[in-house]
Each structure stands twice: as C-alpha cells, then as structure tokens.
Image 1 (spheres, rainbow, N blue to C red):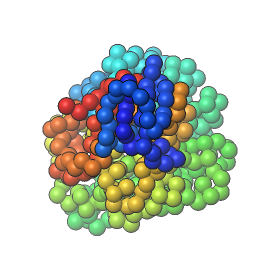
Image 2: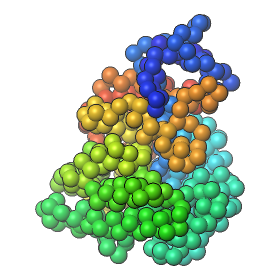
Image 3: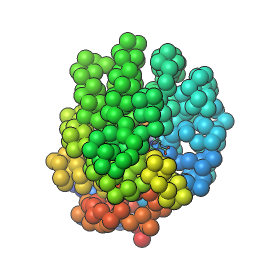
Image 4: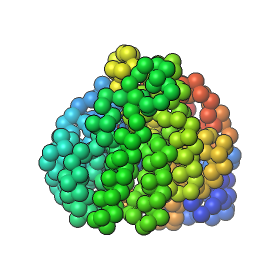
Length: 418
Ligand code: DOR
Ligand code: ZN
Ligand code: ZN
C-alpha cells in the first residue's frame, strides 16, 4: 500500500511525503514513490494516535462498554493504541485478567490494547497486587484509577515494586476525605446549583504527595488528568527540580469550565470535576510549555441509566475516544497556536515514551500505525453516531474541526470513514 500526496506530521515537522507500507511496517518515506496508491491529497497523516487512559469496562461492566465497542470507538477516533484502566469487575489485578483483556483485544483485532494493572488487590488499598506477574502477562503500567491509594506508605512500596519491574504508577490524585462526596468543583457554580463541591486541594494534595514520593525515592511517577492551575504549578516546579514526573490532561479540562454544570447536565459530571477559567487557561499553558506531557481522553463510557438520574447520583465520566482528537486539534491548534508537531507529541510520541511503547514517530522499519485526517473538515459532535456504547458527552452539538478518515494499524486499514 502506498499513501500518496499527504501532508505528514512528525514531532520534527510537517512534510509532503509519500508513504509505502510493506509487511505491516513503514517501508519507505519519500517525496515521490512510484506506483499506484491511495490518494491522500488534502489529507494529513499523523503517527498513530495513542490514548494511554481509557476505560473499556470489560470484564464486568459490558453494559457500559466492552472491548469490541471500545476498540471500534478507538479506531474511529484515530487511535491505533490505547491503554485500559483496571477498574473493572473483576479488577485487573492479576495475570489472569491481564491475559483475558489481551486475548479479547486480539480477537477483536482493531487497535492495540495495553492493559494497566491495579496497584492494590481489588483496588481496595490494602495489599499490593502481583505486579511482576501482571507485567509478565503484558501490563504496561499500574494505576488505582477512580481513586488514589490512600496510604502513602503503600504507595511508596508500589512505586518501588513498579520500578523493579520497569513499570510506572499512573496516579489518579484525590484525597477522598477531602472530596467527601463532592460531585463538582467547589466555587461559584457549586453554590449556584447547590451541588456539593470539592476543593482543588483534594486533587493538589495527592499530586504533591506523589511528587514528594517520587522525589524522595528517585523514581518516576505519572499524574493522571490534571485539572487545577495549582496542580500544573506543582508539576512545573517539580520538573524544574529534576523530579521524574510526567503528567496528562484531557480535552474537557482545556475546553470546559464549571459553568457547564449550571444546567445540571449529568454529562458534565466527571472526576476530577470541571474547574474554573483560571484552571482551564493554566492547563493550556501547561500543555504549551511542556509541564503537561500528553493528552488522554479518560474515555469513561456509561449507560444512559447511570446518567439519567439526578446530578448527585449520576456516574462520573465522559465518553471521549471519538472526540478527543478533533477537540484537541480545534481548541489547541486552531484556537491556541499549538503546532501540529506539538499535537502529535502530546497525542502519540509522549504517551509512547512514558510507557515504553513502540510508536509516536514515522520511521522506516517502524510499525505502520497511521492516522489519516481531514483537518479542514468541520463536523458536529452527535453522540447518536458514536460507536462507543457510552453516549455521555458534554460536547454534544459542538462544532469541531478535524475528521478522522482512515486509521491504519500494523499496515492494515482498521477504520475507514464511509
Ligand atoms: O470521571 C471519571 N470516570 N473519573 C474517574 O476517575 C473514573 C472514571 C470512570 O471509571 O468512570
Ligand atoms: Zn481518574
Ligand atoms: Zn480514568
């Protein structure tokens, strides 16, 4: 297969190149390759997008999503590799469940799926899970996502064991005692709506703790879905001191604020909560200056029954795989001056580097994982068209730019817009 006349984006720059694919790998990259090919005039080719923070819900919550529907949503969203969080039932806390997810992913055969193992057994925060065995079965990281490991001593042990096995801990930062049942950010809009608020400090305290642990131990740590200006500042300062900290954020934190909760739409309910304009701007600044390394969707699909209830009772989460790229391109590149090479760094190269995955760049001999996009195409987010079972998005009705046309994994077309 040859892709012809495409604009090709790499972290180094944007070039007009033809791409020849052979045996699942990139066989040739050159301004002009002879032979018949797929005409990509007007289209842009990115190194396959990678989303390192996705909830696929299988096993246990297939009503919300399963590995098949989640994979279809991923490739429609342009993702060639995704990492799935362990808050399933049973929890992904042992090699059997890791192997199960890998086997199902292979049967589905769309994108590459890398399981993330739980830090503690059953995510109960009591006993470390069998980290080495999970690594052996293919886990690429550890996370307690959905909550933090409350006990700092246990977390320190987790970081050390993880490091022994070449894994990182991906930390959902939330002091549960301080959140205390809060469902939105504590501020003007929590007062206006009467919804129970949660302080920035609930997130920041644990970001600070994980940074302290990483610094004291001389080990790496990754901070999930940063939403506060103060959290961005903690990470910026830690990086300046040489702490091995990396961090991610999500489109909803750089596009929306808590003003979106005013109509009680439960699709705006997410954890950590949507915050204020000051936070939104700091998240954008953090992405621009490298404090925030990457963009993830935190794809958290829920069944309508879990969202069509009063705000306080609704599930936290946004179905994000099918909008993440367009939202990021629109908000960051079109509206905030981020370059295309910087976008591919945030959505492909950085996650690959953080987790030690192959990918993130286009080079001869590398797996042919490619995302082909029409950047000029404007479309409207309509959850009815989602392939994910989760239709829960606060972006419904929003106009965005950047339509994924083709997603190629190991040289095979896994999604093509009809
Ligand atoms: O909004 C969220 N949804 N935040 C989390 O931490 C967990 C996730 C989920 O699993 O639904
Ligand atoms: Zn989380
Ligand atoms: Zn999550």
